Image (cartoon, rainbow, N blue to C red; front, side, top):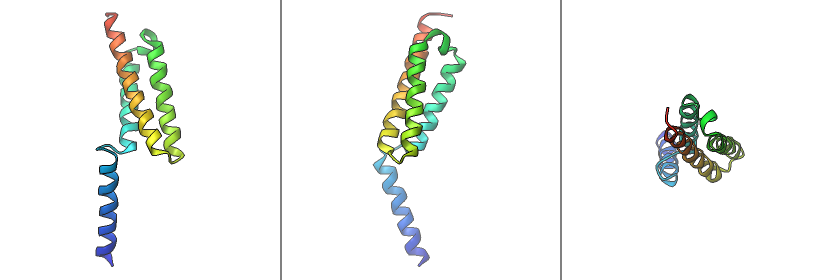
Length: 97
């Protein structure tokens, strides 16, 4: 019985990992949070307010969609948050300082 349970759990884990193309939704949300933190520490809120606000909005959307069980939309929003955080950081350092 234990072997069957462990086998099923192992298959579920492997399926969920491969289905997510290498990243689990919560990992992407964590990375989005980390990228927002880096953008905040780089003062992107001041130097690239539009890009920073978009990153923050997509991060909030990713958390909301994931909490509703919509993992696909949560992943997409987390990836967009990371993308906009990188744009904010890039714009901030293009201006100099």
